[in-house]
Amino acid sequence: MKNILRYILPAFLLSTVLLCCAPAKWTPEEQYNTGIAWPPPPDNPKVRYLGILTGFHQEGQTVSSLLFGKSNKGKIIKPVAIVRGHDDRLAIADQGAKGVHLYLPASLEYHFIFQANGEIIQSPVGVAFDNQGKLYVTESLLRKILVFDALGNFQSAITMAGNEKIQRPTGIVFNSHDKQLYVSDTLSHQILVFNENGHFVTRLSSRGETLGTLNFPTHLSCDQEGNLYIVDSLNFRTQIYSPKTLSWKMFGRHGNGSGDFASPKGIDVDRNGIIYIAESLFDTIQLFDNTGRYLLAIGSQGNEQGQFWMPSGLAIDGKDRLYVCDTYNQRIQLFQIISD
Image 1: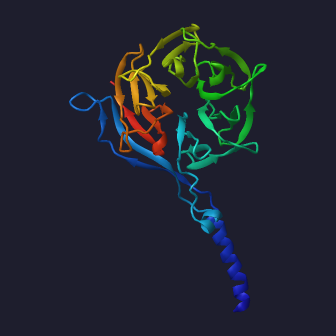
Image 2: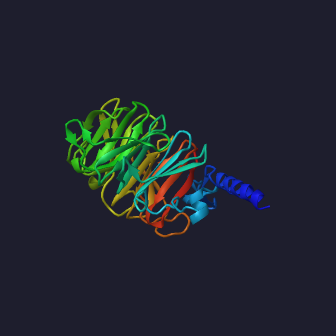
Image 3: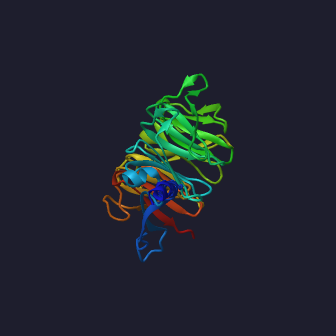
């Protein structure tokens, strides 16, 4: 009997370990409620509340989870930027966790990116995907644009724009029309442009208050026509640049009323040309038409459904869903845009 156990026991332990070493599957930790809408009745709703995302939950078991309990690395702590890719892949810059959450729903894979070539990420600010799913991360303290492949493996770091060092990269967006990467270099008051291979192309603007000049630019977005939207933060306005015509437009003013800006953050544009801007100090998302005319605001200060505590980055996906980084409530809030 002892001889039989001597062979059976190791085999049993080996099979247990192999079972526990199966690839872990991850799913979003989400809560849904569709009862809130803006504007409220009796007006026809333009935006409907969907729910919240607080992190990513490990479904399978690994050896580490078996020995030490399930990992909590999927928890969202201080989200500041978000982007959704063409295949619904999701990336969230999390300054509280000092890294980037990368979720691949097609394979239920989750990766937490906390270093790049051995260098610890300290302050991720912006995230963007290109058409192939390559991930770009702006790191403001390291003064780098970090480049990762579609599975989150580090590829390279961009530190120079021509002959000049990047000073403070923040907002970032990949323009699928001209296949170029646009990056706000906030301290140089410019937008840096790179091609798909990370090679520097040109720089846009300089410091100023007139049309086409910038004062600490931050968040960026592109519309379906390839126009670039820039949060010109300390000019308290949004500027729109057309790479096709090389022309500029702007709207916005400093103030504390509806449609004014005090601390504008994330920006994106839906398929109908409606512009969504997070106003951090007002704890709202403000909506404008394509001429800059104020339409309505979503949310208020608080931690209930549809309320915010200093929202920052936001993004709209191909299914007309709006994702908002509710930064100090430690969550992403989801909304459904209702098209006419």
